[in-house]
Length: 341
Image 1 (tube, one colour):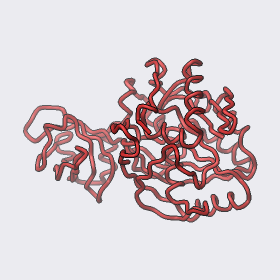
Image 2 (cartoon, rainbow, N blue to C red):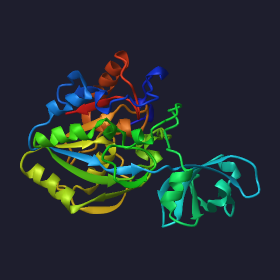
Image 3 (cartoon, helix red, strand yellow):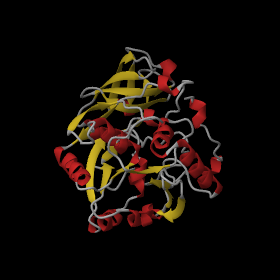
Image 4 (cartoon, rainbow, N blue to C red):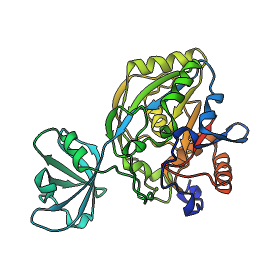
């Protein structure tokens, strides 16, 4: 399979620059993967598609203000750091711009020395491993200095940082939001629970590699970035019980999907665990656990688009995207949603 097989043209005006005021009022395109039939709804209507005994799986990661601006010691300049993932306690893998200026043994100063970064090494993919030096609590300093790491296609300023968090976000560590979850409100989740739908939470800290287009010609040659996940015994028990009782497992987002497919065994049972996953799901993949998927509309030639094509069929997805473009759905992180059933 070629990367170019997953390209489509998207008018720039359909890239959502801001979240809509009411999360659950986003539009919802419902796709039946067996028939290819489409329904045009509002996100809060998603409850109509759940049955008692189903299980909704949510990623409760929380985005950290991972974008920092500093300068090399003794220089007047602006260097942007993006924290991708924690390697050890104070050592982080970071994306640096402009990268040419930042070499091993450089020292970067943030806000008059409130935070200092020593550059340790340059990785094969051009990211840098840096060690932070500070007094106090790192997370509190990051809250003071950091900005939300919005994707590069969002040009607008986000006034309320919480709009780039899910309402159920809990465990800090992501460089990007699990955006399919942005449509849920606490009220909607309560109504879903009242319908006797089980809810299970797992954690996967989203890396920015999620959004990068695939650069190789043959997608089988693409190497996925790795992301840290945790699936508790409680979550595994809820999901396994749902499956054994004939309920459907509905993943909220590609991050939840990748985590579930990582920890499921060949019998379709979830094994509680934590670690790193670099699972790459593209057409031909045999899904072990999920029955439904709630997701946003994804970038052309991205691994996320390949994942949804693997789940619903490429023709179904491209037909749905054609409908979404013709009917002016909003795309990407702050955009509208799809439910694939």
